[in-house]
Image 1 (tube, rainbow, N blue to C red):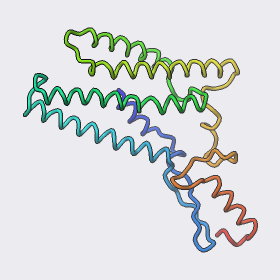
Image 2: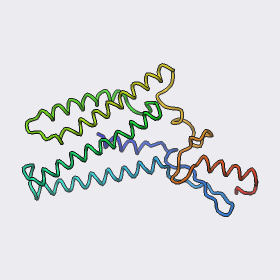
Image 3: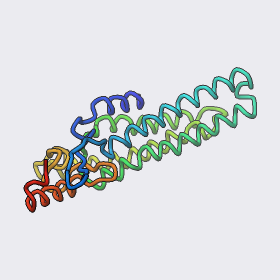
Image 4: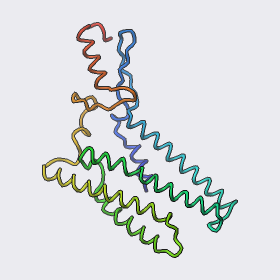
Length: 215
């Protein structure tokens, strides 16, 4: 389900945030070339890492179970424990940036409060169910405990900011999320290694000082 959400995120990524105009100067001539934004570049990088991680883990697990042995084998058991610890680390990486971003922008955005209202207690019940199983290793349920706690923090933030937005008659989306691409208030998307808003202002200043500068 998480993979499906990520695929939908990439599929419906806002088109005006995928690329932005990048100003380049060549012999007093300015050209506006499209370039990937930092957010889209990061999203693609994460997609490649997640896909590669899934493929590698699947192949190694199949090899271990086929040629090494089942859970009774020391190496197979160690590999399973390693996957459990890796899941905890990746789960933390998954939620911490979203918590930080929600706290920084002070709004719910596109997050679904009803979804988190179901997932948070669901994670707690799943953790309890796995932990109470006879002979269960802690690495099998710790990832659900960590994700449940992190999602609970995110849920509390979203409910709080939703309450504030509703009490002030505002939307769950901050203004910067719905403004035009090259808004004049400095909220233009960042391009890798370039500040679009600053470069655009510089080009405009050059054109005012020399009308023949811009082609």
